[in-house]
Length: 125
Image (cartoon, rainbow, N blue to C red; front, side, top):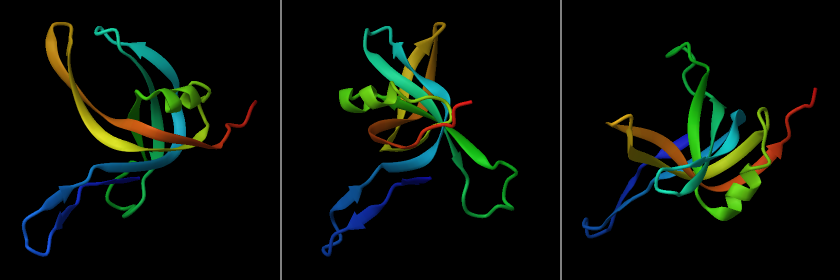
C-alpha cells in the first residue's frame, strides 16, 4: 500500500506542493455495487484487502480492508465486472466525505479511485 503526502520546497524556499496519491494492489473482498446517494449521485463502492508490508512485529493485523469509491465513468464500467477474490490495482487519492446518517453527522475516509486494472481473476469454484 502506498499513501503519501509530501512537500516540495522550491530553491527560494517558498512554494510548497502537497500530494495525495494512493496506489493499492490487493484482493476484492466486498463485491462492487452501485450506491445512489440522497443527492441522486451514483457511486460504485467496493472493499479491497491489501496485505500489510513493513515491520511484521508491530501488529497482529496482516491485511488492511480499505473502502474504495469510484465516481468516474470509465473506471466504473471496469469495476462493475469485478467479483470477490479478483486481484486488482487501483490508483487515486484519499478523501474524507461528510454526510448525515440517521440525523447525525458522520464521515468516511475512503480511496477515491481514478484508474483501475484487473490483474488476475478469482478462481472459480
